[in-house]
Length: 471
Image 1 (cartoon, rainbow, N blue to C red):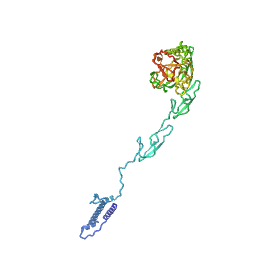
Image 2: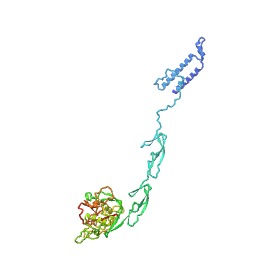
Image 3: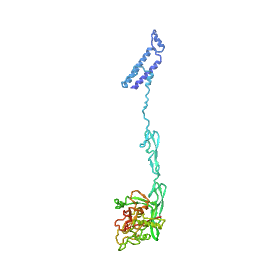
């Protein structure tokens, strides 16, 4: 309806303009000069005024109708006034859609919600499927484009790196990627045997080959020393690491200060050493010192025999004996073992498992060791029972053995526990024996230690010793 009113208004104004552009004839009487004058001018005042008045009335009418059509709630600001043709024409121009100044700008995109990484609208970004990949693999990537808040693709990691190659392990050693390491089929072979060797290569955590030992040593190697016409046999103990202390049921006696075998801790020997293959015999001791302290019982003299261990010694006799050996062999060192050296030699095993009894089979029976006997036989001759993995005899049973006191155990690992000469020759309050004797009636273990706080000159009828050779 509003559109029709505007059209009628436009036609009227157009007609009015056209009519005013042409003279309008007017009928006049001869005496009406004013009329003639107006006629000469081409317009009739009354007529023009009438037309204008009529046009104003039409405009007012149309305006009123427009206000009525728009709801009639407001009065037109043009009511009672004349509108020009140009204003009317301008009002009749088609409406253009208005531009909303509050329209939002295009949205950006979020690549990674964790890191808050944004991608500007219209821009592209490279994204990866994961932040890292294993060595030897490639990072998967794609190009993602942001279009008004929508990001193409699915990968959302902004960076990706190739992880470094993995290392390899061989025993306690670490082998870098691309490096090689010699390995052996066994860690120990008997004297005269051959160590089988292969080269193993590390490739990103995977080690070629199958040999598992980084070192190989010969065991059962013996050395003979002739001193003062007396033969002494020694067995080589290779370097290595072992767990020292009681770790068997019934073996840990923490309530007894002098007998405590805990806590278990590692001890490492960076160099090997020679240890007596047998306990020092009565013949060897008497050949060096000139006497035999082993007692002789009335009937029969079961302990006094040259090939049996020497016993009934004062602790001071030990240093006297080894000092004299060094006098005879000045280029070598002789002494008793430390507790750590003795236990390492006793429990040695070629497969790395601790030999708890120090016997050939790893078991303790009357066929493996001489113990639990108070018969007329007493002591056994040395070497009557099989040796252990290193070929050392009588580490369990026969005569117990004096060693140098280690001290209280701690959990701290030890390396190359030194021998203390001052303790060797001093009035040390603790004297330790290892291995048990023929008098033992209970289980004998490599870890078992018996300490004595008695006077150093006390003699025991079942305790002897063996010696260490360093050169």
